[in-house]
Amino acid sequence: MSAKAETKDITEDIKAVVELMDSVIADNSVPRNIRAAVDEARGKIESSEEKGVSITTAIYRLDDISNDINMPSHTRTEIWGIISELEALKEKLK
Image (cartoon, rainbow, N blue to C red; front, side, top):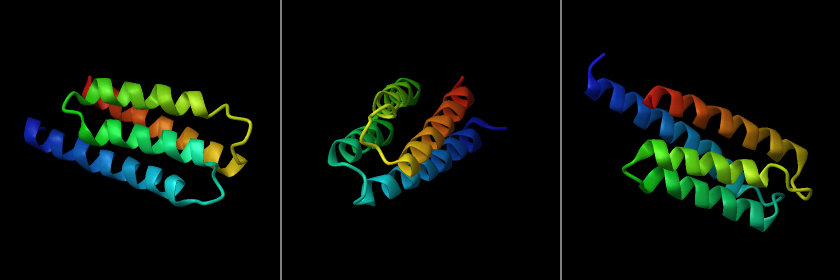
């Protein structure tokens, strides 16, 4: 696979993860601090040129909030899914 095709695949995967994050951010049943943390993580993976570092930062941020006692259980499951997708993306970048 060429580097250009691989970059396109990574970009598509990032877009898919961002869509998952957007659904959490748009959910008004999710506490504001959790939506803000997801938005912060989304900003990290969208804006940085160094994708490996930004994905790792986003994973740590999401992992921190995944233990929030105020988080609805369905949101926690979504956050874990997003973390899994980001970890898979990180592996692709290696």
